[in-house]
Amino acid sequence: MWTIFGVVLAFSVMVVMLNRRYDLGFSMVVGTLVVGIFAGFSVGDFVEVVVKTVKNRTTIDLALIITLLWVLGTALKESGSLDRMIESLSRLLREPRKILLLIPSLVGLLTVPGGAIMSAPLINDLGSKMKLSDEAKTGVNLMFRHLWYPVYPLYPGLIMAARLGNVEIYDLVKLGVPAMVVTAVLSFWFCFREYQPGSVVARVQGARLPYLWHLMVSLAPVLISLVLVVTLDFYFPTAILLGIALGLLSYLDWTEGLGAVWNQLKGRVKTVAAQGLTWRPALTIFGIMLFREAVGASEAVITTAHALMDIGIPLGVLVVGAAGNRPCHGNEHGGDGYYHSHF
Image (cartoon, rainbow, N blue to C red; front, side):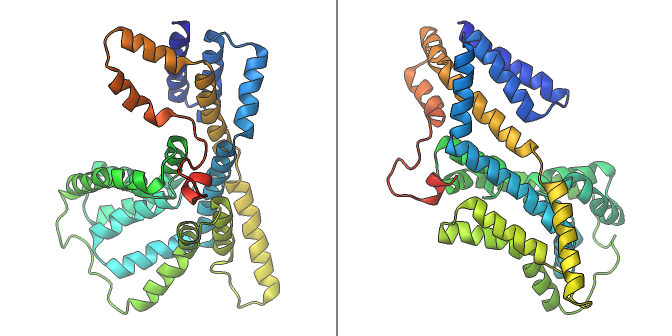
């Protein structure tokens, strides 16, 4: 009973810490300590849990993936690729509502640091021309920046869910499609219900082919990572590293010679390293995996199951609920598929 109480208390402590803006990884570490104390862990037990977490291949892979995705977003922002994407889409679509919803969508998909702050001025400018209220513009930035997360294979949360649940990521993507479609329809209706066609200046005319080219070039670092992973079974961190390298090389100014290009590249690398390489993603992954390992070692799940069965909850319900919490031991179906060995 004390173990169950410790888990409940740990979740409560973590929620309070997050509400007070403590880092998620640090909050999970504190929650782990709470679980361990109420489960009667000795110092040796705590050390064993930490060692198992650090040595776990899942912990290492996820820490690398999440950190490198953050670096990739920073590289795209620093090279100007993100600005080119938005400009190209604006010229290609020429329909204000589509442009407005795609701006936050791109920022969200690319895991750009400070994404909400970056997309807000762009949405505010065009939204004002469309005579949208502040509430509608805020809704666009919030809803469409997170819209694709249930179906986007490079979304860190989806990657973690696939790896921890020991399932292929596209199984989760298929489950997320209905929710994404419903959210898109309702968000579009709510955010643009007050929009009046003709309230924006005349659409830009001209050839679209150059902008299509710029869109493909600016998206190339993300696309190459996805292609390498999905079609060639590349190790995910390696594929993201190649995407980062391509992002750093994008849109360099070659007009002043190799020396100037080299200086540009060095400047980009320094900026991306300073802004993108941060300990927080890795700490978040470590905290989550540490908490998971501690809860497993405390046998809180088994104790909780027995307690729930004692009050009359059917065993079948508990089995379904616990199915996603089984330990991950690689590809249990044989082979060395990417989604089992590298996620």
